[in-house]
Image (cartoon, rainbow, N blue to C red; front, side, top):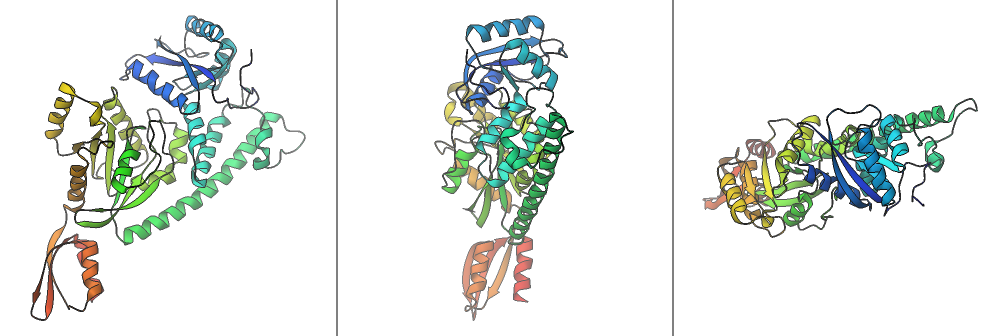
Length: 430
């Protein structure tokens, strides 16, 4: 039968028929059915047609195939009977395990890391995003030259020359990968420096930066669009957003703030991607406030929250960074579950139940964000010459003008603003 795969390339065709396999480890906090659905969703995100989903109990990982021989035989039978072309293992496979499973199952095998890398490779739109994905993919493939991915004919135009006649193919490919990775890192370093300059410029402005973070498909982009009036891609797809988007918004008492929509996190996010996307995620690290958008209707919502917090810690987000949770997709809940959630949220000051789709709770969320960003503000009485229009405009832009009155020859403003902004204003007048 035709498999639809080129065995000399580490790629597979869209529309491939697949089985998803979740090796269920003991002590996992994940719901097996929810995990299978998530992985099937990841596969669907790149056009794979998932025909079968199976969770297999795993007492002890097998060095050669991860799962037991009986389980391998059962999956191989399903692959043959349904003429499947791909087996997606929701686990991290060693190169040897991947090769052995391909031989035993008679079809292409990819693991969770490979699947996520495929999605990122397809979704990245900016030059920076493509560089990051390529670097992560090369890092992943560098240790997998033991299997069929040992020829780079299709990519040699971008990888340079092959080297001397005495090199074996694997040695040549490894050298090509190392050289290409070195060039990519240099380019990304330049991107990071440019991004740092832009961020420093914003901090001098200074406009507060609010970053939306959360598990993939939690509704960050939908909320971003509602808050900014933008139309960034917001579909019911895992990893719909890869490249960061920044927009200016106004909040009560804050004339200008920067809202950042970032790539969604996922459990067991490949370390190669965490490292490669460090420049992108610096927007999160330097944010003044984090809004953790959660899919509160998801059965694994708590486990997803823990995964996001883990990634935030890995990329260096300080625990002291102000943050609160937007419990999204309230519109999907009803009855007792909705009532219980609202009751639980009412007992906390770091939670806001919302629906980014219907807008329920979003106005309160905006007020909460503004209050959190301005809670360190103080009230100042400032007298200006009536002709000082630039000074008056500055006060309106950087603070909340509570009252304005005329006292003799001066205009007096009662303004609530951050102490650092007041100091900047006084420096301006000096």
